Image (cartoon, rainbow, N blue to C red):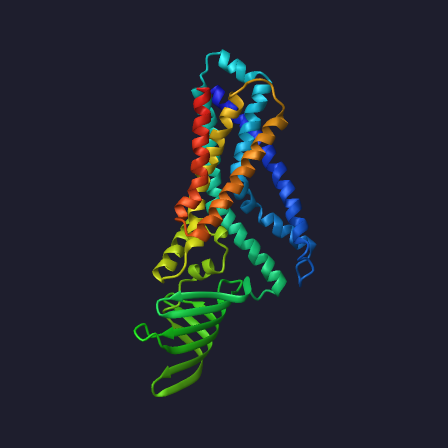
Amino acid sequence: MLIDRYIARSIAWSSLFVTLTLLTLFVFIDFIGELRDAGKADYGVVQALIYVVLTLPELLYQLFPVLALLGTLVGLALLANHGELIAIRAAGVSLWRILGSVGMIGLVFVVLSFVVGEWVAPQSGAFAEQYKSRLQSGGTFIKKTKDGYWLRDKDHFIYFEGVAADGKPGGVRIWSINNETLELIQSLRAKTAVPLDQGWQLSQVDIINLSLSGVDSKHVRIMPWDDFPEQSLLAAAATKPEELSIFELFRYVTYLRNNGLEALSYEQTLYSKIAAPLTVAVMVLLAFPFVFGSLRSAGIGHYVFIGACIGIGFHLLNELFRYSGLVYGLPPSLSALAPTLLFFVIALVSLRRIF
């Protein structure tokens, strides 16, 4: 138990130092890039810094595998350089026992990665985008693009320009078709849509009904609409896949599939988020043989260089599989999990050489 705490403390402090160093570097880089948008409406330099700070959990989640690898490498390397690992081995402690101690802190990393990726990063990322868009657009919309957002729900095609700060869609257009004849039977244009306990309430609605007898148009101030998608699905459509939690991604992928829509990019992100905690565990496992393969003294820079090369290699391989999956239509589970499985095999082969 004492050895477990000692090794875990060394890795934890090293990981904290690596995390603060890398986050400081990336915050500075992101802040410099964000200054290009400063000066738009109420979005100034201070607001740009606040926005970058709000995106820190998302950045931390993306860097977690590399941070776990570098933290474990540096923590074990410090023990090796001070002769403590040799002393532990001389006391009769087996490599398997030391690996178990490393695995315990690795499990903590896995849990932290899951918590940050599932709850903290999506919430802070969404709030950061809301904060920035509200300041740049005068508070009208959180999300707004040139082409707006499109959804298909049953026999309705839905378009909305953006999502207001309270989560309500604005600039709504709805086209209804006859599923049997595929003919357009109704067109609606509403200023806003407000969620109710049952369905939605559209306001300032222009209605055009088309039939064999002609075209009928009218304007109503308020009307109910029961077939509008749930508010969470609208929010998902107006949010980058990376900013959604696993549960939100799963619901949105199911929704897209049920309506016959393309869901490949969202499926890839879903499997990538599922694989992320496993990747953290693999990186911790991979760090072990690099230190114990040779207990000769080596500078910390040596291990940092090794960790950086592995991290960059994993990132490039991950991006290669991701874009290959989109281009060639590979199964999302394969393109998302393949890099992690490959590095897991490398870790097992490396471990076998030292045991």
